[in-house]
Length: 407
Ligand code: PHE
Image (cartoon, rainbow, N blue to C red):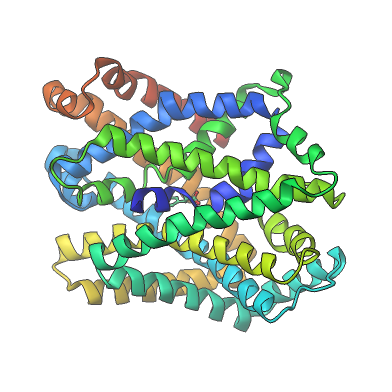
């Protein structure tokens, strides 16, 4: 559940539905699933093996398996920290919008007014920084409560609730008059739109969505029971993540088209278009929607914080509570910079997802594919073709998308 929670996040809600529509509907979904199966899932297994085989934090795990590459551990930990910082800004916005929707602040809202509300929130440093701090504080409280009592317990309750909420919104959305156009946008296959950049987009999205390359899967796997199976944990996580992204698409796009608004991605979809649409459907739906976003974001942010905390506890001998406080303080600083300066925000996003994440994922695949003894890897993955995917296909594809995305 915790792995599924890490995977299911803002990536599923604000990027996936739009990407599907823009890159050829069902044709893109097929490519996305193929990328997951052939590249992302093998990397997931590699990262998971490193965690489970060593039972250490990201740095310690690499140090014991491939001492010369141990510094990549820092890259992954840094990536987790940077993602945590800018992700908390968006988490803070969701918190802000949840409070506004509870107070009925969205009733009768027009699109232009929604844009003004969003701009004024972003333009008010006090509001965006304090909401970011609330979100980061909630993340720290859950992680501070411990792996089982905090992260485990939160995930076991929140993830099923999150699924129910999104299914509920999808049902309402699909019943609106004019919803068919949104369904068509998502499913109508257009293979002519599948080109190199579309495949790179699918792969990049599946990396981010499965939280790969930054040590979250590694750290969570280091807490697995001995008899837990890596293949099924990874398979279920990828399955949940993809199903959730699809349901989110059916919750969002039919409503967008029914309202006659052009679909968008990112902040403008979630914080401008959707409040307008959902507020036309009563006071409850906006509350459910922003609560869902908040939970989805929290279940991901706790996994990023845990990567850094595990490193401080294991390598620096810090007490868990002190480590949580230290990372909270540092992330609050970078998060504040992201909250007030859009350029800092987008630079953090770009560097972590296009550079650091790729370096981490490549290192994990190479260490498991080329450094670890073959028999040891086969003990975990069982099938030779999975080993081959980790050894050959994953590294080649990571280099290919890194080059495509950076050019
Ligand atoms: N998978 C999360 C999402 O889809 C983001 C994330 C990235 C979480 C990296 C943890 C680590 O939003």
